[in-house]
Length: 259
Image 1: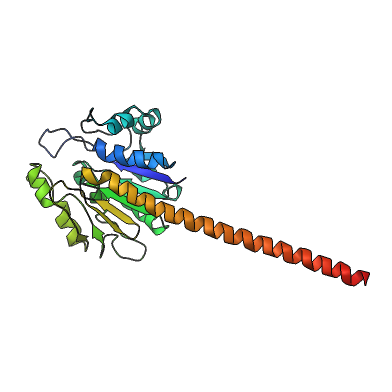
Image 2: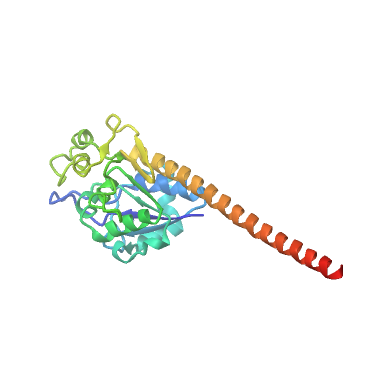
């Protein structure tokens, strides 16, 4: 079992438009189901802590309904931890949930930057979908490079912002900002699924890509778990061999004494 931290926005309004927003429920629910079905533990955090705002729930999507009705999830989202006080050492992965609100509070959150960098520097996984990659902006690793520098990254595209009617509202185009920071922005058509895997960084273009991001993270977890088990087996074999050698030496010593 691995521990995954899902981070959501605390922004409830799109700029000064008065239009309500929050975390995208589908982008949280579908990965949550993938992680939960694999036996992993999911925690929640937000930029400001407390109960985060959310977008509308699609009542025709059974996964979204299950997510919003799950007692453990409801408790976790009722009072999320503030990113500033979360210890990255407690988690094996971080997943940044999208929703337009992230464009305002993810990029300049030092607490979020520290969490993402801390988990990645320790060998953990980083996942993000749609506008979630706004939380990858400005993340610097121990080696001095930006996390996205020279990496394939999928995120909500400029064309999708236009199609969603938000191009005049958002503070910046996410795809452009990622490229400015050295990322290779990869994409599919408007609102089509696209998941990019580059080492331990897994990103998705839009809501349709959310489950795909989690599934790719799950594949990486499986590799890690396989490696961990192989190491444990190797250590166990070494201990057993050592004990066998000791036993053999004692037998030999007893034999020599008797002789």
